[in-house]
Image (cartoon, rainbow, N blue to C red):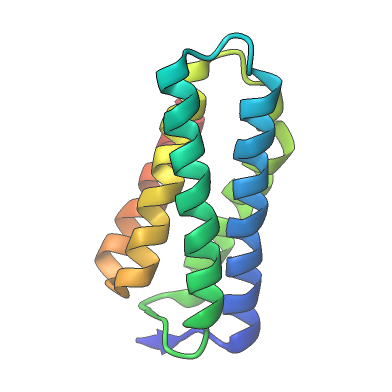
Length: 130
């Protein structure tokens, strides 16, 4: 197992902070069409994603994954896709599903379980591609 370098964890934490901003932008752009419950769920997800970003930055020297480079590449690729296009999603449920998958990935990274991290990355990719 490889340990993330400080730079890799820093980049990963920044991805999470940017994803939290993207979820916030999605909420703002869809404010008038979101139900009160969906708005609250997205708000909760945004807050969790923000906290995971901060936690990942704090744990930068002790995070462990089996295949760091491949995992980070997948996370970076899907993060870029999400950050670049989530504002134009017309499907509110997909936005909620993606936010939930990001929260799940954050929890997996904090858990330091390589299998859970890999599964969560795949889950995020599937929720975005569906």
